[in-house]
Length: 310
Image (cartoon, rainbow, N blue to C red):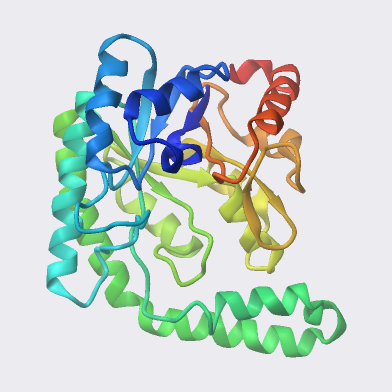
């Protein structure tokens, strides 16, 4: 099921209904209400929804944004934080987001589970730069030594943060069951983020008997990890297919530019989508820098190539 995220044009609008109208004018009717949304836009979005203008397939935590956060920062508060206040604030905002999701009859809520305390500049950004500089090709021993160090360090310190994420998700899952919303635990782009791939499998198995917890595949995020040799994109998607509840769809310009318009970058959607039930939400999550004309052209091509997803 093709859908579209408000992250693309949220920053250009002060009123929620005009933001919705711009997306509707491009021919999308299934929308995801994304993070970074100021609460002042909520009345306009509610007006558009009550008027029957769009179908809300899902929301992205936190929605609306915490009032004290003035920028688009979905990771401003984390369940894994060492600060008790941040953990509580993350939980409180998540439970409120679930209430809002229920008001819009949303099927799912995408959520991030936190991170381990490893500065990305020192790790993911550095290993990405090594790939960009072709060190992985020209001096693979140097690259592999750094990658192994990265993986071992994260594994060593991750246990506490994984436990915090699971503890938080257990509480959130009960609220999700109560309001009838599926929790979509998203694949992340940085290896410091929680959960990594091994942890994601464990997490999904932990909740395998809970009807309101599943896996959310972000094509761009996973491709970034594929590009720095932390996984194989198609193998990973095939592994996670049994847990899949939906996807964020965007393309990647090698090696690190994601949230590009689908079918304009390096992703082989023809092969990857074989592992996705086309009835699941396929939500285009695009950078605000992407032009409307390019989106409309890609939409035409997508509709011809993947009519089963419409």
